[in-house]
Length: 76
Image 1 (cartoon, rainbow, N blue to C red):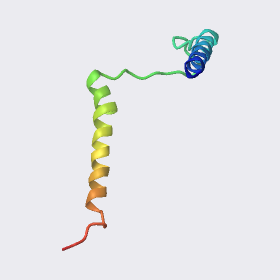
Image 2 (image 1 turned 180 degrees about the vertical axis):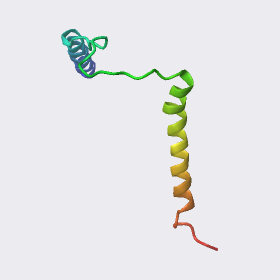
Image 3 (image 1 turned 135 degrees about the vertical axis):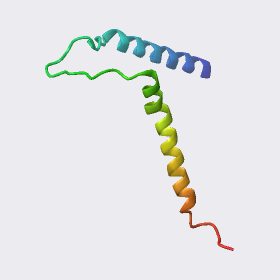
Image 4 (image 1 turned 120 degrees about the vertical axis):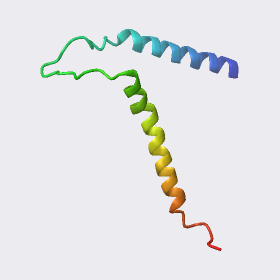
């Protein structure tokens, strides 16, 4: 009985996903809106720095501050 329920759940999920994909319209990203003024694009280095390096550095700074200000350690 478990196999039948799993097959039914998979079919429902696949069917609903397919229907959502077929019913959605494109994002029309190439059509400019009124007042749309995009800036210059980012280089590869800027993109990696902004979306990879900066979050890692922020995480390390926050983790370091938490470790330095930790009061749960016993002073000997």
